[in-house]
Amino acid sequence: MSPALPASLVLVGAGKMGGAMLDGWLAAGLEPARVTVIDPGLPPEAAEAWAARGVRLDPAGAGEPDAVVLAVKPQGLDAAAGAVAPLAGPGTLVVSVLAGKTIADLKGRLPRARAVVRAMPNLPASIGRGATGAVASPEVSADQRRTADALLSANGLVEWVVDEGLIDAVTAVSGSGPAYVFLLAETLAEAGVAAGLPPETAARLARQTVAGAGELLGRSAAEAAELRRNVTSPGGTTAAALGVLMAGDGLAPLMREAVAAAQRRARELAG
Image (cartoon, rainbow, N blue to C red):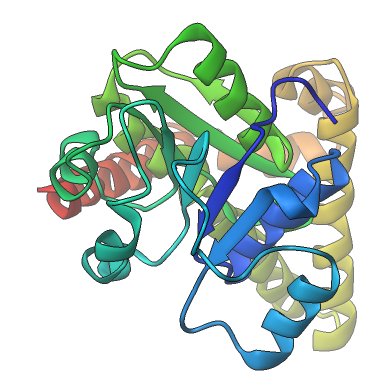
């Protein structure tokens, strides 16, 4: 077990994201008996599966754990706060992955809590390939930050920002970003059909192209721009296509506009 992982942890919400995070922690060596799950909506079969792995499902006796991770849906925070508030004491690290809920929101609902980390993971965290942005309240100690980093990095990359306002930009880039990539695969397949390919063939080629290029980007130390140049022969087919995508009214301004729209909406949702 990593020394940065907490000795005791309460996970509030063990749905798709919370369950994936718990899988990552257990794989990283966190002992199941050190984890308590609070989730009244957990299906019986899921509860049985976690219990069979040694995870505690009864919060009685949990005391004040070293860490509480909030992974319920944002609209479920008020309902969960009643059960969590007695557990989150002044020495407890609170890590939240709730979209749109600020550090001030969390402290308002957990009045005894001091050290709070707000994080924004994305969907690939569910397969251990996530990109998470995080920010810490001033009360978070160096040891608690290492604990938060260990918990969040069990499911992928973690990038820390110094200003909570930047979490809205994180949301716009990586939080919503997987949808942009899925749209790329979708529209690439549609373009293939327009070029004459059978729909099933176009869909398979587009899907594997996006997945393969993403894997190559993830494994390579080269920048995305360098990889792009490496596959672009002067005067070739790729150069012809990029001439359209990289035009003044092409992909770059559209992406800037899309990210700005997502950032504005994130601010609106955060109030």
